Length: 470
Image (tube, rainbow, N blue to C red; front, side, top):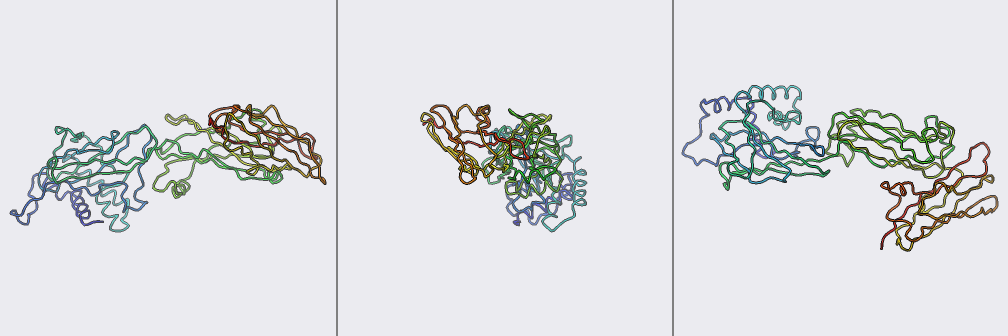
């Protein structure tokens, strides 16, 4: 910490202790000056901390502040007027139109509260070194914003000369920089103040970095690890993945999870299920904060929600082979939390292998919409009792698909699956969630013959591409 910061903090500590306050603010004798004939520096206020989060503060002391979209957040900057004279304060400028700057001077009745607050803070958080001691002396902690007590003299500062505040000699107070944003974004804002007179040499810049966030944070994609059908049949509790959701702005919230069943699935026939939300422990929340995208942020509350893949549904319907996809919707009765849809994907490896472009996926790539495109892959098996047919009831409207008769070579069977997008049949990227016609972009093939000891199966083959206007 720079020497000027040390002096400001120590002076402020004395102020909180009431020494200068009693002698100056209540009209007593100020400490002896060295020489009244020496030139007097421009009167100004002392701010122990001018930027948040503080670069030198360890993470256990302070994380970046987070404000919810559409809500007002603020940061307080404590000050002491140790100049020995009254100081006029005004605004040169501020970081954005979303910000407001106000200054509050503490009346004498606040001093006992400030002393008590600093002492309680020190007793509750034993010093872990001299740096922390100075922080406690300044009575700063996110839970100890400058107290909201009556009889305070507060002025909203603007660039108008009439919108200024006079801070008495020896007074303690705060400058509050507040903001209100309707967009999710990182925000860095500031208040640039002049002291004494506008255009003089006494100025201070108070800065803060804040993240404007949604009330609910969640990854909108969940991939469940691939598993073979035989391994899946052995798992009594099924193969599991977890949706993790949390809030950076709310100490508590309610969440509901629902699996959105599309044809032909129902709650009874779908082998994929969603379990009840489980609250995250404080230890898990802290582990979340150690992940790189979260560094410097604080998770206040959250849940983990199990997504379970079983070998069979409640009515006995078996899980499809190949790459599967489901949509889980999170919603909340709490105001301000909008529904969020999570794309859940995974793979069940069965007796049909798919020689696709990306491990079982047909990738058509970008193509001109007016020209269309086509592609083909092979389906293969060593099981002699299996035959295949297209499930035309689940075919996307923009795809023309054919399946060849089986070819046999030494007990090995194979089929050629040909895929065509006719000219002007598709538009834009697929799959995509905003349009039901493109949401489940996949070809479904069914087994015809009955394999010994198992039920008939459905095989899902995802198709992706981009139909450009060109």
